[in-house]
Length: 251
Ligand code: NAD
Ligand code: ZN
Image (cartoon, rainbow, N blue to C red; front, side, top):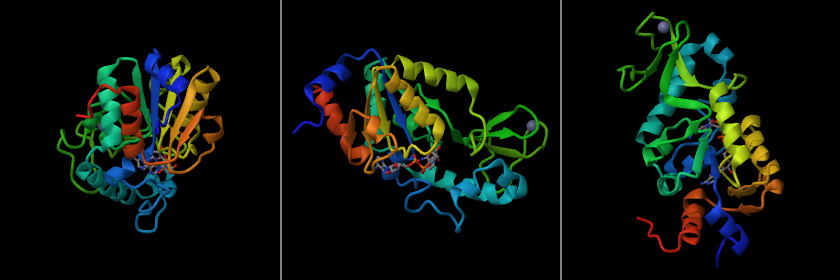
């Protein structure tokens, strides 16, 4: 049985613009814990108590230890079918756009060359004093514990948008534009608790897009979606791919 009814299928096949909006759930099949799901706790700390500017100011060593632990998990993880299908879809059609809340770098590793990483990237750091940005691995800063700027010796921090911090305005503007122009928004693995990504999906829908949600759980956004597929993205996305491109192989 097909997941998509004929009208939605045709809309997807003919859409001038499709936006994928992904959250931590798409990477959970790669073994990366979500914040709120199983394995999200680290040494009894909640993410909300570590991913903040206040936590970093109070105890940068602790926050760096947590990021070193998370980065190692991301390094060892491999993209799953969910990431790979999106990358393949983007290669096939320039009308497919990707906005992610994830910082794990798995989308680019799967082959997504153009994407918006709304919350930053766990492999990048920036200086707390000057404007320098470094790549932890390429710039040889990939050691555990505190890291210091190669230009001015000040403390480096993860180049990540922490709870309570402002988003990068350019990325945000670009994301709004993409969502406003889209005919289809596909929301994957996000609990819709973070307001900006939730508003982006709502903006797309208010501007006429149909919403498709892939998540084993229902979210605040489920009622505004045309379809909710209750399942794992690594299983549902290959099925959708087959329906949209019946003549294509998966390889
Ligand atoms: P979230 O709010 O995006 O919630 C995870 C969602 O994924 C839940 O709704 C869950 O039901 C769903 N889910 C779980 N497994 C799934 C699967 N296989 N397929 C589809 N959906 C699945 O994530 P969060 O953990 O609450 O994190 C909030 C923020 O923290 C994110 O915006 C992100 O920036 C950051 N974060 C990033 C990563 C990462 O980069 N991989 C991991 C954890 C947290
Ligand atoms: Zn510096």
